[in-house]
Length: 178
Image (cartoon, rainbow, N blue to C red):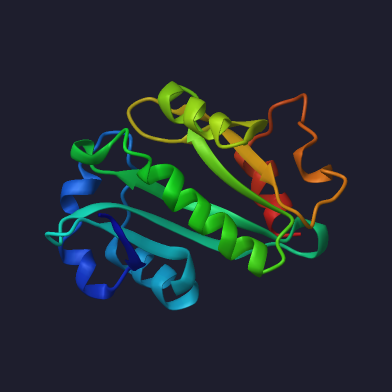
């Protein structure tokens, strides 16, 4: 039986087994603690009966007016626990929190090359809203898909009308700040 529970500071010292996946974005300790302090309700962990961390989701709520939305910053499941529906369980949790916060939609960014994740998100009702050029940096820069799912507050589904042209990181930052 899987238990969903709030992520705690102590978990920061126990979740490396989940973060070693090459497709999992990892961050500095201060980034995780910032999320724990600002959006604790959006930071949940899936735990096995033996206390093993199976996966986690980290997110936030942000935006203004009809851009008020939940955002998935990180979702990862340990390779030992994949294909059990944990990612869907964690995503549903974040969507429910976003509904309670009266968000219009939930969004997330995913590498264009991560077809397994893209298909999973599509099966959960997400659409590819737009492409963000060179969102991921590293040995080889990679574009991201901004995927979205409208929530009940967005009655006319305006938040999921896709862009036809890709945007740059500069354009994304400008949109986020306004």
